[in-house]
Image 1 (tube, rainbow, N blue to C red):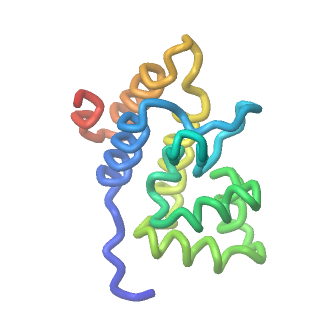
Image 2: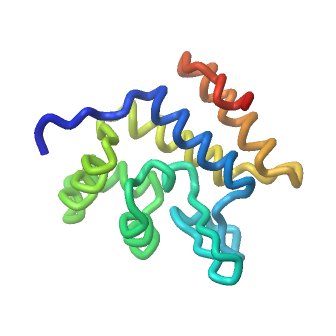
Length: 147
């Protein structure tokens, strides 16, 4: 794809944070495994993890979940030229996500903030605090966390 207007790190941070905070809970299955998308049919809700809010359509989220790809797997696929590289790049391009090392590191940090955010029994509070640490370390504006 040419002419892609990739999201900035600030836009990535804001979109992921807003999405998780707005849904009010994490996207985890019963076994405490993160899901890019978790459909709760009985409640008619769809939950997304931090990175899941960045993927442009639910089919991408479902595909990444079906393959069991963590962000560490995505980095490995892109770094080691594995067979799924073209598919990952296509999904990231469609989602306007750069696939350079620094952005992939940011995506992993966002995912880790989501996945490890139930330390106190208040997962969204923990998520916000983890995201605040990311903002500080990366010199991003944390204003979205105060909404």
